[in-house]
Image 1: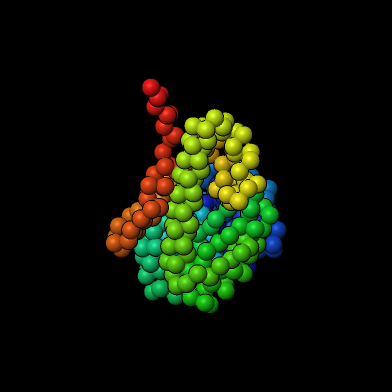
Image 2: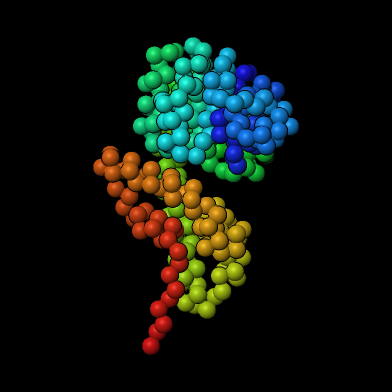
Length: 273
């Protein structure tokens, strides 16, 4: 298919590589000479503007960092005006379901479909073709999205109507942050019991308490090192989740304090008398 791509960064660049390998024709927005050269080396066609990304494209994949960037591109820029009728936009950026709704409302008048498709995983998952994608949209739009996204994602989960992908991803990130908080508390308890953090983290992933959160922390060697790696991304998504929950009158319940423990630095234990 003729694919446009915006956001060829840490996550986007391996996506572009997989799309080219799958036989798609890919035009990618590139803002520097270095990006032009690197994307061309992958077999993609680097272009200088969103207009060039959109022109004649069947599916545009948006993988920028923030909601504001999605809005700037899709609502304040020229992308929608240049996309042909019948094209599809897939929003990989994790953000508010309201943003997906706003983009869809603007796109609908031009006969353009929108699917929200936030992702779970990292560049290594993209390279392996095992990235998880939560897709929200109509059945027909999701089928089209899967024909492209399948170059780097498996599973691709149709979780409901437009916006449902974002809601699932935000719940996932709340739960993941809460699990990191529980790992942090386990490390704190272990220290009180005389267990060094490295020894504890080396053991627990193999036990009944094991899971993605503790394995991810253990791979980094400490809770603080893991936070320093993912904190910027996770805090952004947690802020969106908090705003959505507040707007809908939802209650994080026990997840709330665990999330705070997961995102805050580990406080040193007070000395005992």
